[in-house]
Image (cartoon, rainbow, N blue to C red; front, side):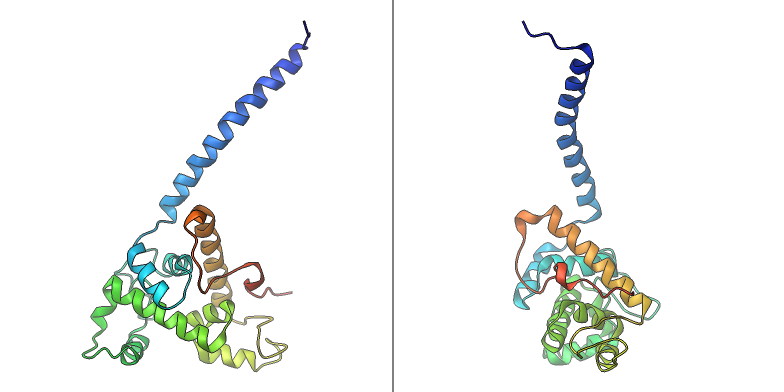
Length: 207
């Protein structure tokens, strides 16, 4: 009969308890996180994310940051709905989509807002072809991004940003990236392709 010191018996018991309880705790933690990062409006998100070639989790990450899934959200600058489309931008998007009789009220409708937001992300991606630039333009406007790219203070090659002068935009990209990583971790079994963020696409950091 092998004799095991009482001290080691205690350690083995603790180890076994941890081995059994940690996976359960992690599952509970992930369940709680899924409430914070829900798959709301997923049928609409997948419909238009697929149509415009965007990773649905990127769309959800934007919605989470922009409105926290509140379709009635209105910003201090007048942006409206789930993906915070400004009425001027909404009218421009509507014209491009051939939608007649546009009114700002349609931006409160989840399907319209998500459709417009996905179209806009795709449009920005065609212009900039880089997720960081796309998100920067979604937040600060493509005009500002173009100015930064043409300024050697913010871009060394005119194609990527080495710095972003607007703190709000830097924080915005960081928030979207964090949301996106959380969605892809929590729902990795459902991961789809499209415009996305990876480790090489994170926001420029100030030295």
